[in-house]
Amino acid sequence: MITPESVTDRFLRYAKIDTQSDPESPTVPSTAKQKDLGKVLVEELTAIGITDAELDEYGYVYATIPATSNKNVPVLCFCSHMDTSPDCSGTNVNPQIHRNYQGGNIELPNDRSQVLTPAAHPDLLNQIGNDIVTADGTTLLGADNKAGLAEIMAAAEYLIKHPEVKHGVIRILFTPDEEIGRGVDKVDMQKLGAQFGYTMDGESLGHIEEENFSADAVSITINGVSAHPGFAKGKMEHAIKIACAIVDKLPKKKLSPETTHKKQGFIHPTSISGGLEQAKINFIIRDFVTEGLKEKEDMLKEITEKVMKDYPNSTFEFKVMEQYRNMKVIIDQHPQIIKYAQLGMKRSGIKVHQQSIRGGTDGARLSFMGMPCPNLFAGEHAFHGKQEWVSVQDMQKAAETIVNICAVWEEKS
Image (tube, rainbow, N blue to C red; front, side, top):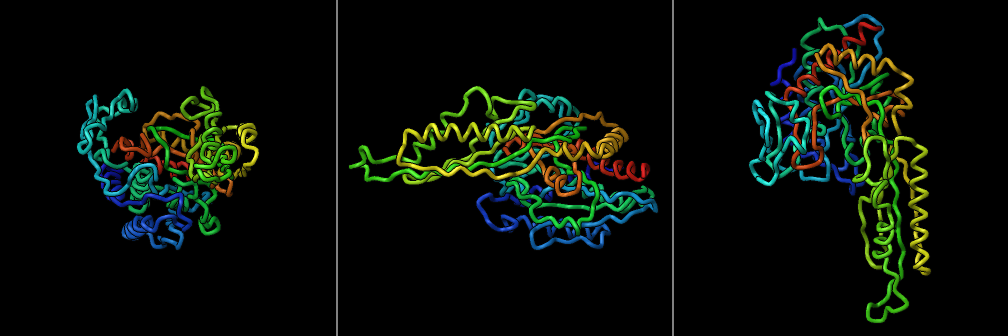
């Protein structure tokens, strides 16, 4: 159906384009270089025969695969994001293909300390005989989410070239800034015009994720008391030390990313910045049950208030910002979305694994914006780091699954 080369060649091109997003930037997209990839994608969509591909002012790519069926098939959207994480360099990515993997360790050539082991990456054990793509050890790879881009593009080309595959109208959406939580801020839902969607941004072969964390961000700004260090006794109240005391009071053996798994939520400090007079702590709060966010935020505020009692002349500001919510609330109202994805995977010869995701995707927010949108596997692993990798054959199967899902929706309409 879809050849390994169809996804691999695309993926290698996309991975070499630096699209790292920037959480400190106020612009949309947060980095102009994301549009460099957007322009390439529009050119390639046009080259395969799509006539309305466009890159808008905000860095979003929209395109349409026309229907080949006369049935009233719901309009589907397949979505992936173009940016890579700010957590690790995405400049001068140098992809490496490790052909016919036969087990054991994979040493990355430009930093020999970066070694992929089956112990640290258990899914390597499922990749015997497959081709593994990594970076060279000095950057991330960008499989999150350029694997998804390559899969959607390969499926689009196949559907355009094979009109005998009956399907309804398919909309393509490529977004910027997903990694910094702004991926769908400027999506024009009316222009998109899709009733249901799938993000291609999951991990292992066969995974369907219809449930994710609910998420808030919290910022605590500490206003301390400044004084000359030579004459500070009884006067200075150091904002940085107050911030550190708050972080130190967090639970040590629970409610943190390093102590939780499955459906356990957490309180996670992501940054501390500032100086003597003012300091700021940023947190992310996560829980599969939305009400659990409030419980954790109340705990964090109580910790802050207790610490502040030791600093009577200092004040604090506690701000909560909603990020996204568990898409299961919406997905459960439309069970056919999951059922048809399962059928599409089975037609691709894939064993289905339905599960929750300890994170969030564009699909979570899109679901609450009127387009129910679970997350499907893209084959990416070890996101946001130098050991990121993806299997060529898993990308190929993801592209085949997209085609088969489109056919299933047409048949069931």
